[in-house]
Image (cartoon, rainbow, N blue to C red; front, top):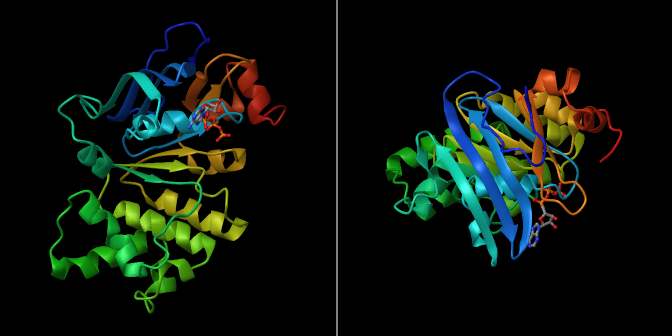
Length: 274
Ligand SMILES: Nc1ncnc2c1ncn2[C@@H]1O[C@H](COP(=O)(O)OP(=O)(O)OP(=O)(O)O)[C@@H](O)[C@H]1O
């Protein structure tokens, strides 16, 4: 288990053994003059699910956005530190943004399919954007594979030409997962993917996450039961009053929930604040 104070340099620690898929090293982030993350280090090993937990405003989503270079798209937003995908820094000057995005996909809080576009075209929409080439004859197979992996195939296989906007919220979110999977990323970032969904849809998305065993998933969630159910390791973020967010503690999900080293983690996971 890793325990950090808000002032000490934060080492990168792999809580779950295995090759590092994504390794954030001393990441700090600012919006204008305001620092919202302070030297956050976290190793997200390949083929595991990492849950980012913590109270509102502590920087979880900001951290997630630094992991696929979305933070830099916000006007006035800056950052320091490194994010290694395998061996290389995604912020290296020679690294192309489209290439980073192809390897590191993202699913957002609110399902955001292209509503007028067909279900089929929604799945393939990312291919062009990321320059991923798939032969025309292989597209059908890819669409089926991604919808299967996203747990949506059975529900939509007879209406692939209908608009994505005609699906339920839970189906739309699984369509967005299928769209993210179509470019074959190695990492999938998920920012509260179930917060707009009912319990049944939430369960379906959680089942989908559990099936993504060949991928590295990083998920922000406010739902402690969900963090327990879906993740292998957890990182607890906190921003003390007026201070930027830090990782107080990270470790295997069992450790963080059952024997946290820091009292603040214990209070948070047991619902005593946040
Ligand atoms: N676009 C932005 N411009 C300025 N400040 C921002 C922006 N986005 C977030 N912030 C600030 O950065 C801090 C961290 O926000 P962030 O959304 O990362 O926290 P969070 O832990 O994900 O919160 P929540 O759980 O409520 O989504 C907050 O103080 C927030 O107000």
